[in-house]
Length: 365
Ligand SMILES: Nc1ncnc2c1ncn2[C@@H]1O[C@H](COP(=O)(O)OP(=O)(O)O)[C@@H](O)[C@H]1O
Ligand SMILES: [Mg+2]
Image 1 (cartoon, rainbow, N blue to C red):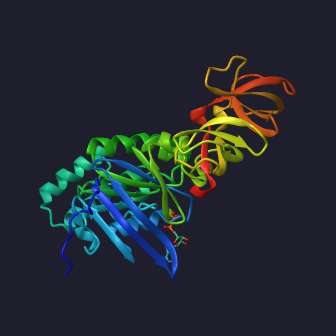
Image 2 (cartoon, rainbow, N blue to C red; image 1 turned 90 degrees about the vertical axis):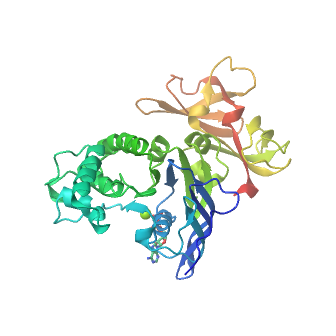
Image 3 (cartoon, rainbow, N blue to C red; image 1 turned 90 degrees about the horizontal axis):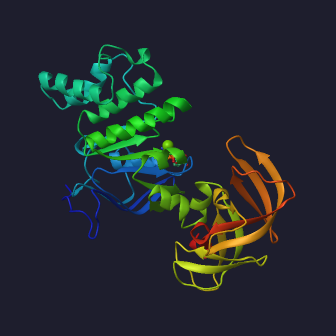
């Protein structure tokens, strides 16, 4: 028997992972140096398909064994505990409801396994169904429910055992677009009202941004940045995050002064601008500046301390609620999205704020 060690030194996490790795047939699938999640936090693990998100949840829940590293939940080591002694509940992408059991029996299952007395089962199932707004559905079978209702039964079944940690694997991906947005809000409300520490996995950027307190972006088994939605979108620390979470204009060049949180940048084509540097880089470091299309603004009188340039409108595309312009700025062609009306071939003044020009050194990737 392994003696449970306390949480790793220096961790502030309710859930902590340290140096957790897993390979399948000698190809690494998960390799997480450190992850700390606070009590009551709603944390999104965001990344492209195949990057190791589900495997990470399965390792934490104990459905999969890890090759290396440790997990701690509420100060207790998890790694050598059997699944049912981890106080972790997981909702799978396909819900995995028992098809021949009623809603009530599905939700009651975990409590009966734990030999909770019948009266308490009835009370707790009823409360869990109330939380997910499914009162009165006790006797239905899963096939008599919509996708969204089945999803809520799966969540009730996880909540009813009052886990210390709730793991949701792409919980909304089987729902159609409108329902997905409604369930987003509902999921957030349920999580806030129960205050159960939750990790949910998604490849949907908007879903992660809309739901999560913090987002961890994953690529090739590693967590490549952790932060608030705004941090991830506006202050990406590497090229993968910058391009995965949204479109950007990308200008190659070098930092002309550094190190610091702000700097000057000169592009290979000769454009000079002030930039923000989320991950400080040395003076002279080659790299790229990323400017999101909605941050390229148009004005004859740009505010002070902005990067301002003359531009020519090369192309215009109508997108409904906005328009997309291809602009020639110096020798670069840059995209701007705006509601403003510009003449094709016209000359305009454009600007973007220093904080919206993000420098990422080549060596940060
Ligand atoms: N049981 C398994 N055996 C072999 N390879 C697996 C197994 N499970 C997952 N993988 C591989 O591990 C990688 C990560 O998978 P997964 O964690 O499901 O990614 P995600 O959930 O981010 O889409 C993928 O390349 C997948 O093919
Ligand atoms: Mg998956």
